[in-house]
Image (cartoon, rainbow, N blue to C red):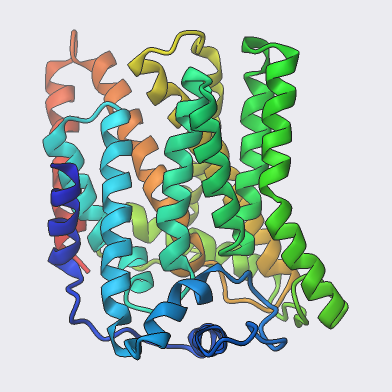
Length: 369
């Protein structure tokens, strides 16, 4: 049922008849995919990004279906919607609320931008969401099968974008934070599995180093000052939180929104760490998902700011920050749910106002551009 709902939600905003936009990055991906489709290597010119996305495009090129890349984007958006719905349900929202939030996700500015383009983020987003779910399940139950899936998605994320590095850091951080729940042998096995899943990525970096003398290709330094990057970052967050508004990054409201989001994330990490996670109960999956999401969002945001500061990349906006949109929205819903639990017994009118404001935000986010 959730899978069908995901396909329908994706169809609301992106039909398989949409024209996929292309940028210089897109043409690099397509050229590398063409080399693969013609039976040769990926090409020595392709060295700035990992190779999985061109490999996903290669069958379309080989079958002369380049004009139908919109079908791939539609399916990847539907996969992202499915993972989003699972996450929202795990954070304690009902089915109707989870579906409404998934409509918001599909309609949101980062998803609308990403899934209308031939960019590797279209593949990275559903893979990272699948990793979040599988790794949280492993933290909850400790099953080997969950670890295998989590490491598989981790390896695929690294093979898609260098932005998969925060996923590695998140896995190490969360397993060490929860180390007291596991034996030393269990911890060593988990770390070994994480290390093993990085091997394909390390092989790619070594290949790039042999070709160019650098691990990620030749890159120019960032000419913009760091405060401009922070400005773009805060402007993006404020747009996510305030539907239909576009605030400049130095606007007080944008700065306040960014600081509020940072405070909520730090609070979430502390909050989830205080909750025991010693039994494989269903409610503990939401705790593990909350902890993993909080650490991942913080680590990913820090990585994007660092990467854009070190190299000539765009200011952090919808494209680069899109992978944290869903976990950030899930954490916001969890916070509202906790506030509701505190308000409901003795503050019925405040609870009603909070409930109404939440649905008003959902409707506005789904309607406004």
